[in-house]
Length: 631
Image 1: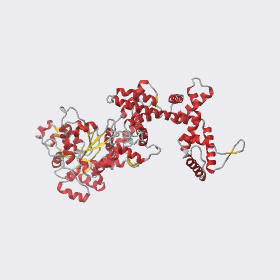
Image 2: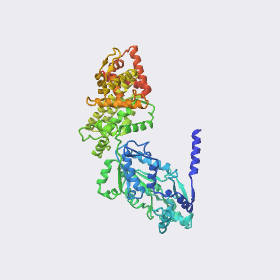
Image 3: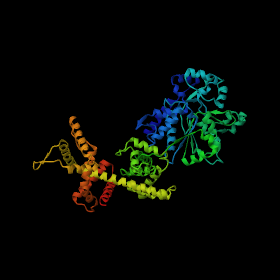
Image 4: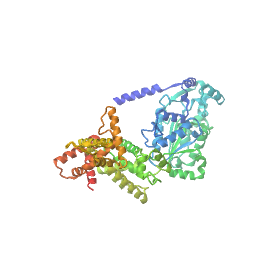
């Protein structure tokens, strides 16, 4: 019954939003809310801006796109700031077709769908409200009723520019239904809806021999010609083409460059002059954002054809590349899995991350700098700290190639392989090794992968596997160390005592004999070497630790195991190195003794409770790490 109540509430809300009045009433409304008269481009820009903007690492992040598009912040910032923003200000870019160009499954269709769904919702808000001449099939702007010779006066009084002329149908209705009294023409609030063909149109190319231009511009209603006497009577015409219905909003051209030329020529005057030709009428005004999408191959073929030069000059191309960040790629997979019927399958931690690593590696160019390999580049792009490199290095890397992200493995391929793994093995749990194996097997079935490319991709799978090996060992390391938490704390306290004595140049007291002894250099170095602290850097590192201890003491806090990330990592690695034999025995023994079994169960419980594994994946991880350590 809850859903029925919500449906009732929705219907009531719809009724509250409805508005109807005369043109005189509409002008009063404009005095109070002048933004109501905004153009289609302005409405789209304000919709994106009103959703919120934040700046991350010098790049604007638009919240409007944040739940569906991942890792495309730079491309989206360019799209909004170089197209939507100037178009909203009535600059010349609004007279261009927006062509999104990028590889398959890169997010082009998702972007357009978001704009369409967003406009539907935005037209139901106060800021995005749209008003039209009542009964008009093209939901025409009421301001078109203002005669040309009065528009300068209107601008002086209202500060609103009027573009476009009254359509033939409304011109006839003005005379016949309203006796020429513009102020009495009825105006209503309209709500964009792709399903109801209001303010949003979609055109898909089909067989050029059978597709009719009427799909775009409408057609004659032959059943009414006898009644109205002429094909040039606007009442005998169906204004139901996609260009008609998309007026005031968005017109999407799917695979625009596959369209027959006669369809594309209609866009020339629509983009440049804001009107198009239909039937035996004067040019019909339309205010709509024309957005199309294609891939790079089709685009290159299109611009190579000299016959397309006129249309090419009216297109703004916006590249929509693949995402190049591992963490963002993970989000893409998570979203696609959530939307599937396999969302209940347990996916072991790091599985999607490792798949994303492989995918991102296929999209990167080899760095020109000898000191940076592909793995370092991948980490830097993902915002990870790589010793010796900073944000300036990332900028330099991005400037080396302009086509990064326009090639490589697409997200759908990865999801298909994950799905294949789940179905084929009838698993309720999958891990990174399952997915890497499936990705490898799928390369033979991929139609566009050449033998040379396959060899390259197999190398990337190997690199991703090596990265997973390190992740797996660290995961088990942390779980084992937790089980030896008292040992870790004792080791750290011992290290800190020695560091303090070293920095203060004093001796320690042996707890057993009471004699004075020098700081244990061997112990300190065995810990520091775990995180790459060199002999030359050891003094600075120890002094930094001592300063941190003093700072904590001044604030009345106790310096503990979690107070210094790098020191904690060093202690964990040192302890794990000392425990390797224990790990080997407990993970590889077929018949563990009671003590070993207890240790295994503690680690498995830790992996399940704190790290997101289930019983199956935790035991698989332990066995795998045991095999790695026994090699």
